Length: 152
Image (tube, rainbow, N blue to C red; front, side):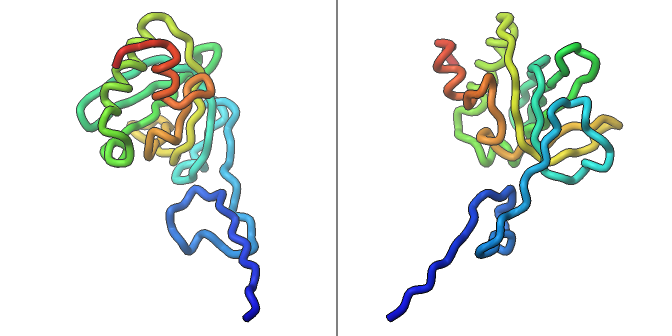
């Protein structure tokens, strides 16, 4: 019996099995080094970016994390909607409260994120699907909170 080698490239931003092709590299995620670089043509695309944490607004099933550039010229909201909460752990509200507390205590945090670019109320932003799609100072949210000894 002969076995055939099958090569599957895993890097993808889609959960659709048809997107994973044998022997082909999946499309890379586009990057915007600054939140100032986003354009209206980016709406609907999955992209990554970097920004500084400016504000955290939390509600039970909907939250907004606002980013700014290094000179505070533009704000860029990250929308954490119901799908985010479904895909995240049960302690996500407490972790977001810990993040808000860190920020209010003057901690400067650099945020890297991956999500779908959306237009809400005339402003470009990003829809984040789960907690693994963004980092704070190169750490996952739970690791950041544990490293800062913040009770959440």
